[in-house]
Length: 142
Image 1 (spheres, rainbow, N blue to C red):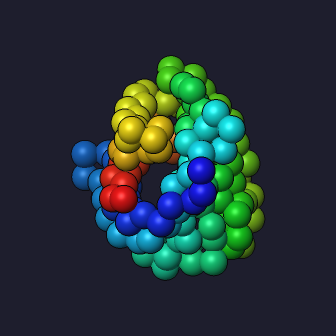
Image 2 (image 1 turned 120 degrees about the horizontal axis):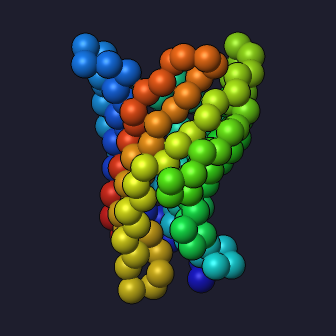
């Protein structure tokens, strides 16, 4: 199956404390396709997230979701339910190690096995103390 052009609505949210929470919503064009046993989405990031010049690929393979960013920012974030994964986050300002704890993954597919909805709830641990509750929600229009 060839890549299909899609419209993505991406909502990211984080909550560091009762007083400090934020959400950002982005609508962008991208592609949806199958790669082996994985359903994938690819899109170019924008300046809204501060990631201009970065291509993001989201791969859903069974019970695992990976968000792969290449360009201005390079990272691979792996999400597995009730698992803690550690990744190196590389930015133009340097690298930092982060821990990702996945609390929930919800994926819905269309009749062709392509992603039509994805939501991930997770926590991020940075260094020795900065934790935040996060979510990413993606709606795909074909």
